[in-house]
Image 1 (cartoon, rainbow, N blue to C red):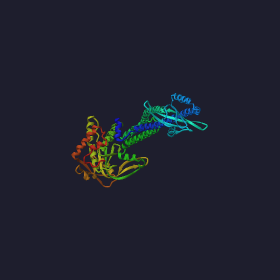
Image 2 (tube, rainbow, N blue to C red):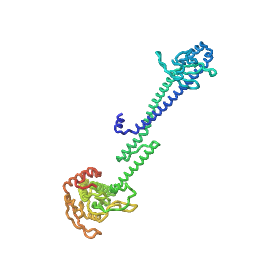
Image 3 (cartoon, helix red, strand yellow):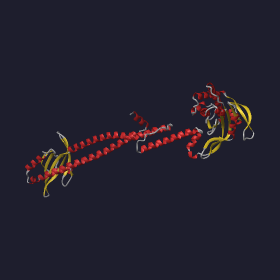
Image 4 (cartoon, rainbow, N blue to C red):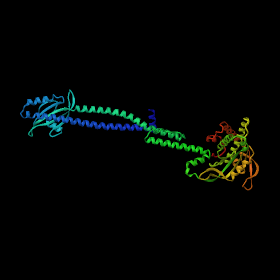
Amino acid sequence: MRKVLRCVRSRQFPIAYRLAASFTAVIVLGMGLLSSLVLNYQADLMRQQINEFGTTIVSQFAHSATEPLFIDDHFALQVMTSNLTSDPQILGAALFDENGEQLFTAGDVPKRKLQEIIAAGEAITGKLSTLEWHQSGSNSERDLISFIAPISFQKVVAGHALISLSVASIHASFERTAQVLLLATLAMMVLGVLIAAWMSRRIAKPVEELVHASDKLASGNYDVQIETRRRDELGKLSAAFNRMARSLREKSQMEGVLSRFVADDVAQAMLSDLDKVDVGCTSVDASVLFVDIVGFTELSENSSSEEIVELLNEYFAYFTVCGRLFFGTVDKFIGDCAMLIFGAPKKNPDHRFNAIACASVMLRLLEQINVVRRERGQREVQVRIGVNSGEMMAGIVGGSQRMEYTVVGDTVNIASRLSRIAEPGEMVVGEAVSRDPSLRDRVSFTAGEEVAVRGRKGSVRTYKVAAIAPEYQRTMDTMIEDILENNGSIVDGDGAARLAPRRSGTQG
């Protein structure tokens, strides 16, 4: 009941209730129409039967009274009239002379002259007529019907005969029929309500399941499935929903797998319109970070393949987490080297600081990891990092059979070169990074040596990060603690927003 009231207040009537109400209304209307037809037919039938009975009796009465009336045999007429009322179905009888005066009466007859009776009555067949009237008396009140027939011989009318019958039988039969129909209607209504409730529930249940499943689907739960045991349209709809859910689940899984190889934004753009995925690059202002494991060749010679793969997976996982914390994207893993992009594919005006902060967290994180490795008697792992920023081409490169998202250009080549000249545990940045005015109050640099880059005229001046503002250092310490506590599993967007530097600009 409370559920119904809540639905009424919110003006949202469940489909099960609407279907049940509709089925019940159809049953009630149908039974009402059927009852009306049956009652009308019953009334007409009873009327026809009493008319046939009355006309037959009054005709016989008139025929029997013909000879006694013409020979003035009053005794026979009186006896005939009295005997006629002995029949319980005949409540009254009367004979009238040619002038309409009553000769003999017995039982209940209208207290009127014959002319008034005929005038007030209704002709039925031939010269017969009928009159319905109501008798009121001290003993009883009842409705009667009188039939009048002429007494004639060779077209000479010598008088009229009258009999009175009760219409109570018609009313009683009508009432009995009405009661039976009312009980049948009530029984059909109860049965109809039960059937309607069952049918509406059977129809509404899969609809409700579809609604609940759609809500789960909207919340990101693509594992939802609906039972499809029905073989009607609702069963087909449920099967279609299951196919859609499977497609969305496969697309979500594909997006999850794809996002491990390319940036999330790139993966979503590819899956949103697979027909338009094509090669092509655009010019962007971004930063590139190369982080290289020092002495990897010697490490490989002294370790098994399984150990090398396990080590690479561990450190690449740390690099990925650090990149995401500062809105960077892992572009690719090249042997023992990882390449990260900041400011592409989604623009981020603070990409230079994010790249420097990410590199700083990597170096300090590995320092703490090496402390643990020394305690375990394992060999320390050192990295060197190169960071550069500037104009570069970003987009999908390759052919129709093999594509990948990456960045290319002189800026990228210089970043790769800077990672090679950096010392173990050191970060070297390009001149474009050190000259960024937005870094003046957050990062201090020291000039390094000028280096030559293969294929490029002239030398490139390098810089080293001397210090990062203390407020950001404290934030980075918190990041490192969380990464170590969660074994490198902090990769969600909420964690990135929580750990991002307070002055890092627009988030990517």
